[in-house]
Length: 465
Image (tube, rainbow, N blue to C red; front, side, top):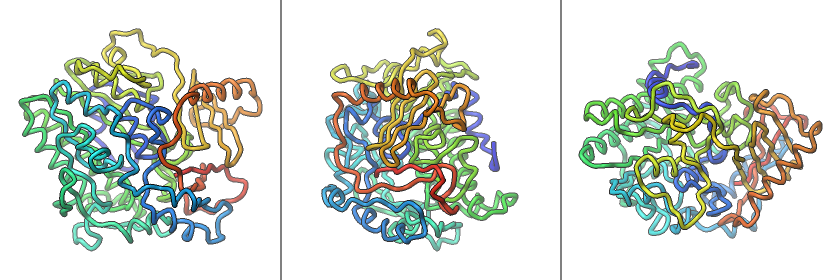
């Protein structure tokens, strides 16, 4: 679809089940990953905010609060002072991850790519159930001056400036010494994923391939960039070329499964940890949905979610009810005959009956919840409420008839607002607070990208992080 063909992702979607209304755990990366790993909300484990390096929270307001924007960054120096080092901003080791669940069934477990859930003997991937971990140790896809790379710096984005200034081209194995990957990062991770499949083809294995792409800094391989001459805008072309590399990765993983005779009886799940960001200045990337990463509008949380398992799931299967990242752990546990933890609440539901057609077509009615500090949302029976303290506002949309959130019904339907606020309060009752504070809040325009001039009249939210 769109400006860049994605034949391999399209083929993966066609050969199994597509969740047509699928949501990330939240509108930012790391807490979504915590929900994928545990099947539990932050009200259970407290991993609510994205871990950030201390320096970033101090530097961003300097970049951002230059007087040119109607809404400044809100920094909290007291909270920043209380933040543990980034590697200790981790998912508690007492949580049971999907890797631990599958390991108990004799699966060899491998993580490749982004982790972002802390490091070391409690928080690292090895500590959380992965036998092997090839870790994203920095944020460049290739060295900036490599002849095989095409860069697109985003000069209006303070985070981009920070990344380019600080980041290197590095990975590490089982949290050992950092070393340079070989070639373009997405292709390197794919090469390693292929090796994992080949090495483990004769035993059950679980591979969590957590690509860094498509994430800023915007860097494409020259070969992918050159393949898209029809895209005239340089930044859009780099972004599209990055998407092309992810599609190629999916194709190579699937081809390896076929070559090793594993294609029919391997479960493959494809998803994303959040929607596309407004801070890279590409207005089309979440179309037709409103909003961006760091907002609970659909553009921030609607994600692809496909499950392929030809032995059990018919091609062309559709699940129309809302599903979330929290459903992944119970689903994979059920699919593999493993036991999901019984000593703690699991918030997700097992989707296998709906994927395999053994259940009636509809999931039971439930609320799906999102929270990031003072900013919260719930979706229930087609109605979605977002509520925030900064700005103090409620937004209510009937997604059943208005999936692109054009018509805010909050003022016209106070009873529904009250009902959904009560659902959020009930969800939070007895839940724990965040493990560590948010050190600041970033204003996010809902209908404009960061390079567009914002006005006081524009819809915005403050995202704590």
